[in-house]
Image 1: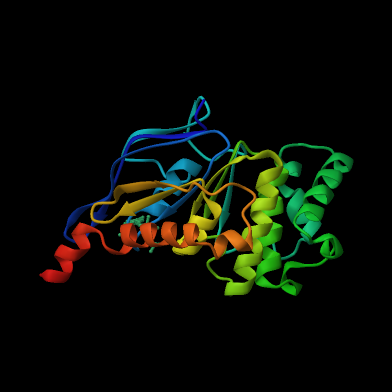
Image 2: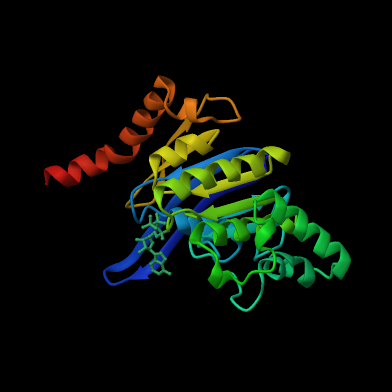
Length: 260
Ligand SMILES: Nc1ncnc2c1ncn2[C@@H]1O[C@H](COP(=O)(O)OP(=O)(O)OP(=O)(O)O)[C@@H](O)[C@H]1O
C-alpha cells in the first residue's frame, strides 16, 4: 500500500487580485519506504503540500491519504520537522525527545529508554541533559529528528529541515538522516531548495512548477543506498543534478516570463 497519496489536491487562497491557485490538482503517490524530495521555484506550493499532508491545512479540494487513512488533522502518525527547530527551550534534549511519548501516555521508564535510543542514533548522547540554547543549529536539528522518530510515526514530513545550516553541517546531517532512515526505511517526504540535497537523499525527486503550483516532473534517482561521498562526486550524480537543475530552473513558464 502507498504510504502517502495526494488525490487531486487543489488549494486556493484569497489574494489581492482575487483567488490565487497555490496547488492545481496535484496527484502524487509516495510508496512505502520511499525517500522522496520535492524541489521547485519559490512559491510553487511545496510547503502548502506538506502542510496539507501534515493535517495543518485543510485543502480546498481533494484529499491526502497516509496508509489507508484520510488526513483530517495532525496526528502522531505523521512526524513533522520544520526549518525552525521548534524545540521547547525550557526542556533538555532528552525531555524534548520524550515529549511526544509523554503526550501519548507512554510511561516514564519506557519513554526515557526510547528517547535515549534515538538520542544515541542521532549522535547527541553527550548532550541528553543540555538545554537547546547550548546546542548548535545542527545539533538542534538532530534533536528535532530524534523527537520526530521517537513517537514511531508512519511517515516523516520535512520542510527544509537543513535550510538554516551551513554547507558542511548540512552535508553531515544529510548522512546522519540517511543513516537513521536506513534502519527501517520509513517513508519520508522532504522539501528542499537545494538541488544537490534533493538528488543525494532521494529515491525520486519531485520537481514542481509555479503559478499555478503543480507537479512538473518526477525524476527517479537510480543511485543505490547507502549513498556515499564518492557517489556525490560521480559523473552519474552530476548528470542527475543537471537533469533536476534544468527541470527546476528552465521550466517553459519561466522562459516565457523571461521573454516578456
Ligand atoms: N495562508 C496563505 N494565504 C495566502 N497565500 C498563501 C498562504 N500560504 C501560502 N500562500 C501562497 O501560496 C503560494 C505557495 O506557498 P508555499 O509556501 O507553499 O510555497 P513554497 O513552494 O513552499 O515556497 P518557498 O520555496 O518560497 O518556501 C505562495 O505564493 C504563497 O504566497
